[in-house]
Image (tube, rainbow, N blue to C red; front, side, top):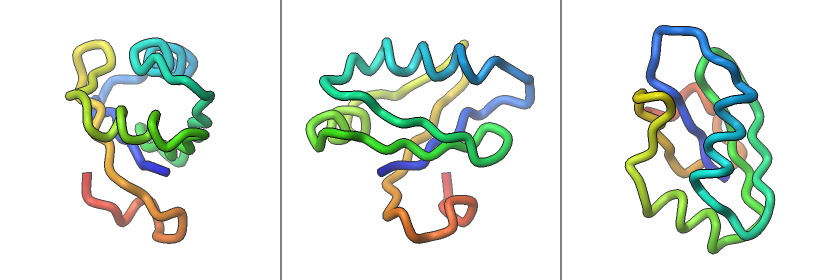
Length: 83
């Protein structure tokens, strides 16, 4: 799993964010993206290779705004992870 934040003060379509990230990452298996709060998401990958690609490649962006991604253990409060 991973946690991600889109660094922007502007509002945007979560649907567009999900769609663009899935297209850019070009994953072998589906990823579940769950919104937590404004601009913060958990990412649950179905394939270790996909997770490694997303974590190792980049930098990622959405509409010119940085998408910062960090490892997530699934137990820690996601809002406490420094991004």
